[in-house]
Image (cartoon, rainbow, N blue to C red; front, side, top):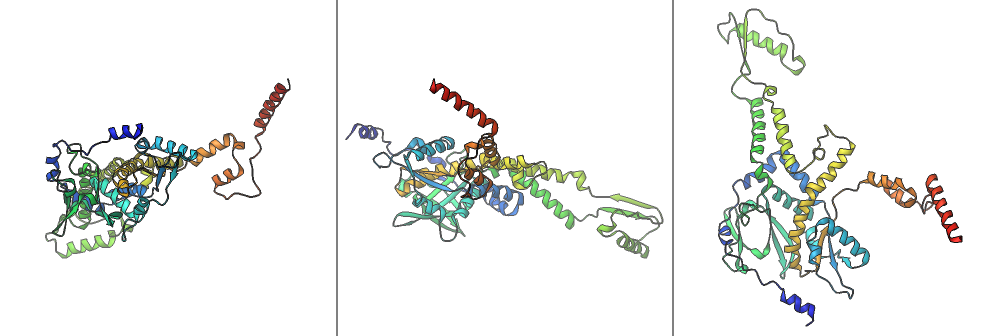
Length: 437
């Protein structure tokens, strides 16, 4: 055994035994109160669904990639620092190593097939979006692995509200199970077949996950109550909007009262007659019983609540159609902000979980899971850079930036600008004179 092998064997981590402090927290872990209601709110509250869908769609649209580092003799190499590096460092290192031939992309890796085609009923994009919806709403997602001859070939998403118990920590690892209850029937699913993704609760880090929607409970309830109040106001709240009393009328059902109501309906009912002057004989006493929506500022309240929900999920207003104070620059910057603030953190979470929990199931510990950057290309920045020194870029690069195919009759590089040409000519002449001297 060589020196390097002896060093590695000396630092091999033994199986973790735990401290004993975690056992009590995992004995009873039913779904959090409100989990079912939050999942239903996604279906019933349009603004919550819009924001959560926006983030989940951006995550589901990202393309996954797998790389494998190889040594000079062609053997795979475990690179823990690359797998745990931040996205900026990892992207730079992957690019330089690809250029140097130190790493290879594995386009047919089994994990890519499983992420793209997880089961016979849902596509990979649908499952990824569903997982992100679960994480953003309640902070946890469960994927039950499907195996063939012990090898994982797919997975199935399970709603968090039907997972009624987490595995107990006081039993052997191979005996731990998740309890799933559907329709009053409970089933024990081996923990080894469940990929449990969760956002830990700081107050109970070993318990159930916690999502952003839990923190928005009061805001979501308030917006829903306002919507129901408006609906009830238009339907019937048992009170008329106003009471009118005409002097001389002793019976509300008399012929005079009926004639007055018919006159009101004939002369003032309908949007085209709004604001029309009313003339009547006798003394009329009028009293309003309702409060106008304008006085209650319900529109402003709902706008505030909607903006609060949107900012909680870090979604720019332009992304959800609010262009009241936008321009071309802010609209493009909104796409970058969504990628930087919302998509990237969630993709890093999924990448880390899949790298540590899913990749080892394929027996490929050397593989590195990564993804394409969701940040859109800044074409205006590229144009500014290319315009600074046009002769540094070929005709083909200019046409590709404009969205056109390469022109066979236009090849090579354009001539320098007049000022740059003369400057470069002078430099060339001075260099020539120096060499001749």
